[in-house]
Length: 312
Image 1 (cartoon, one colour):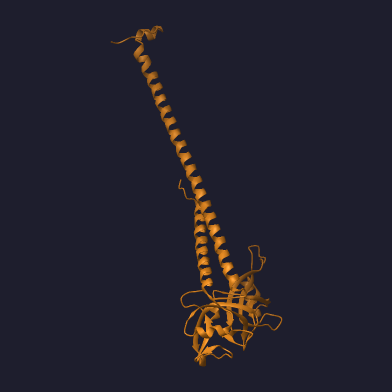
Image 2 (cartoon, one colour; image 1 turned 30 degrees about the vertical axis):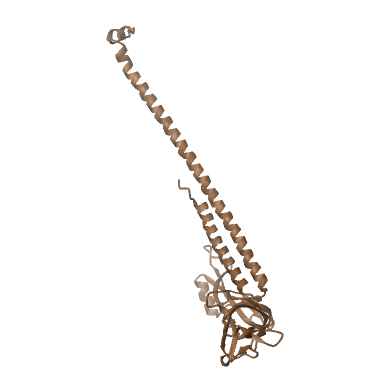
C-alpha cells in the first residue's frame, strides 16, 4: 500500500498552490510599498525623465465619457465592462423542457480617453487601463434581451434547444469616482496627448500606465495603505492555510504509514503461525504414518498386543 493516497495528494497540492499565492501576494505588497505616493500632480515635474512606480489619487475624468447601455439612468463612465450570456432550455428525455441554463457568450471592455483629475485642475492621463491587474468597478445594469428572429427559435425548438434570450451584465467605473492608481509614470510627446490640463515638462506629458518590468498596475477605489494591507492580509491567510494543508497531508501520510506497518506486522505474524502449524501437522502426520509400522510386529498387530522394540 502506497503511503500517498488521493487525500494526502490533494492536501499537498493545495498547500503548494496556497504557498505560491502567498508568495505572490507578499511580493505584490512589497511592490506597492515601494511605490512613491504623489499627493499633488505638481510633484511630478521634478520626476522628469525618471520612469518609476507611483501612486496617485484623484477623480476619474473624461472629456467624452462612455454611456452604460443597460442602466435605466444615463450613467457616464470611463470604463465599461459588458458580459453577455446565452439563455436556453434543453429538451429532456421525457420530452419536456428543462430549466433555464446560461452559457458565456462574449465579454467586452470599453475604455474612454480618461485621466485622474485633481481639485487644482491638473490631470494625469491613464493609458492602457484595460491591462490593469485589477480595476474597481460597480454594477450598472443586469437585463435580459428577448430572443432573436422567430425562425431561429423555430429551428431551435425542432433541434431540442429553446432560445430564452440574452442576458447582459454591465459594470462600470463611473465618471467622477475617487480613485487610487498605482502604475509606472512615463512621458509621451505633448502633441500626441489630446487632453486638456495634462501635466507636461519641456513638451513631454506625464502619463501613468502598466509597468514595463512587470510591476503592479492597479485602479482601485481603495487607498494605497488599504491596498498594501489587503495584499499582506491575503498573503498571511494563504500562508496559514498552506501550512494547515501541509500538516493535514503529513498527518494523512503518517496514519497511512502506521496502518501499513501494522498490516505488515500482522501478516508476518500470521505467516509465522501458519508455518508453525504446518510443521506441527507434518510432524503429526509423520508420527501417525510411521509409528505403527515401527513399534509393532505383524504378530502383535494381529493379537492386539504391542511390544516396543528397542534397537541398538
